[in-house]
Image 1 (tube, rainbow, N blue to C red):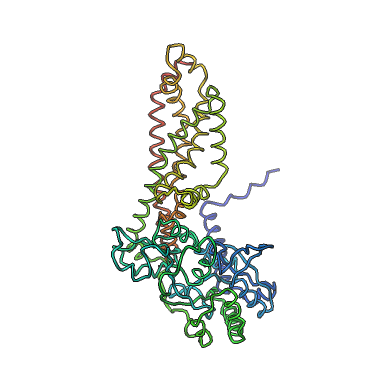
Image 2: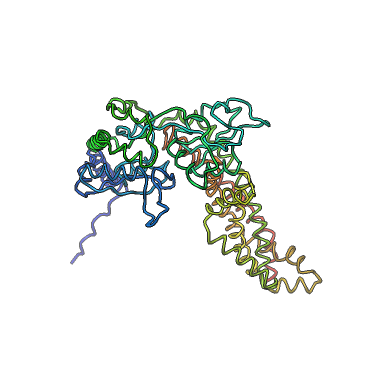
Length: 528
């Protein structure tokens, strides 16, 4: 009896066709799903929950932690969202996110609405639906009363003693946009990730002034830690705080507008603003607001706009230079410090020294890099130790990575047989000479790959230095994508720049390994 022939196996062509058909069906399903976005308002009412995104780091009087027990979340926007949610018949739920990333979080549908002092701008209304305003803000300069700055008009004059005026702003805010009008020859704009960070630098005398939204300025000068600051001159400019929803959430936008309108007409909104001491005559214009004033700007942009890269690639390259400078200045310091720490932790070293260095390594490895940078740049000035952003960045990165390099070198040194050291000592070498000429060179070959990996990682960790007001590559990407768009274009360009910075290190590492292999090959053969 003849066995049945096995069925023919599908060819590569058939498999490819089947794969393409499956991919096409999936893409079609995704397209149909995206063409019919979910009804967010219906979901809000079904879940009885309106989730709003905000950033507690922005501080008072928007959203902050109460100093008094039970230390709950308070702020005029917290109370506003509670009232708005009540009008919709649901409860408000807070969701934390970085201020400058709130709209991206909204795109991912993790929240229903953004409300955190977000200004009404043409750039944002291209991609999102704004509600009617709930606050008319102005910009206020803050400075030391006995300092050289007394109003915005002073910034148009040469700085006494020479140099540039240094004015702190919250990055990507209305104050940041307003500050672009300053004469760059006279004024250097310093961007911070938090409003209070800028105020701390004014208090310590490291910058001349800070430009803040009037609500924040009025609140913080009444607090003990910033009572030495004053409002420098009258408030300038004006604009509107609005809430933002996704483009397709027209029903939700309309429901929020109706709630805000009801709160404005009933006087509840005014009562909230007066409670936080931020009501002024400018708010009277909220009662006569019409939807035409917040209508989205009808503009279109190519899916991939190469003109953005053409216009802004020099800016990205300049920020990449900041990244390279930070990495190349801090990593050699980290390697040198790490090597000495590793040698100091060898069993032959004094016990007290080993304990001190071990404590250093564990403390540095056990605390985040951002906290270490914050201590160097914001806490030390309170003790009279002033570091420039570059000095704090290089020192902070070097300290942080020195702990990790110490562990790498310690492992490399311990991998060298003790007989190497004993043989060197028997030949009459001192311990330091034996380490320098026999042990460390052999350990160097072992640690090249992990040290190179750390160097590559350091390029990415320089992004944390944005907390020091340094505009490195990642921070520049955030600024550009938030101000001019091009999230995809700038994202690809930024990724490629990081790759171009990392690849030479990989090639250099491999070349050094090959070179050391060639040198150490006969020695290894002799040992066998």
